[in-house]
Length: 358
Ligand SMILES: *Cc1c(COP(=O)(O)O)cnc(C)c1O
Image: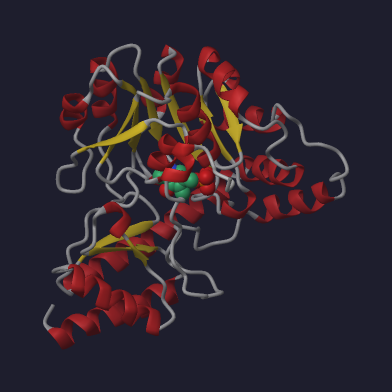
């Protein structure tokens, strides 16, 4: 008998990362920060290397303290993960399974679909309107089988943002036995006051997720966190591997969170480059939704033009992110990189439009 994986794992496809085609330098395809982490985080990581013979703190004590103090949240609600992807996967596995549904939206981060498949749950999507999450469409799509609603705000790959009041309206209208997961991976780029959404976590039916991978420039260190009520934490921790955030990553994360001035400066610089890039693209005639993240979505006239632009950019060593996995075959997602790279990218895209009357 040939070896066989569990039926639902065999049936699912692996989570699709960006296709780099062997490219070995930073790309504009993964929403990594254009800037390195805080020098204080780098120094703390160096010091921590020497303590690597010891297991890391399984309760992330210093990091939870730093997050609680910086974000004005209750320390006991903070749960940490090896990237927020781990928290997404463990939360979905703990609260959804065979015969149940996880409800996302058209363009909500695809990893939630992958995590639902792993858990044997069905992933369904509520329609978005004009690249924006529609709370009414989500509410209309809830069924008795819905166990989790997954919303990404600001959105990836759209970059758009809905008002926090809309998220509060969603929570108020959802049944109490539906867990609402709000993924705020780009929350530091959103200028809305986060406290009202953070406060939802205290209800015991809502999880709010953040990461250090984007605004803090620590994608390689793999650290995410979220706000979880105790009864949710108890279940999610059963799914997590203990000691999953390394000693070096924890040390870097604490120093990075404590260096708010560096993070804020990085976000401002990134947003300035982004807005200039988006203005240039619009001036060239491209459709670019308003972004509250470190990337922009560009819509082309059709899928062929998006694919042609993707390969032309690759020819200039610029790797964008194709979005066929989201059904957005006429779009590309471009991460905000350093100013010179974005100038080059804008010149290439502007020239394409001029040449081919896109
Ligand atoms: C990048 C990203 C994450 C994942 O972040 P990690 O913390 O690196 O695992 C989660 N959600 C969204 C929407 C993202 O774009």
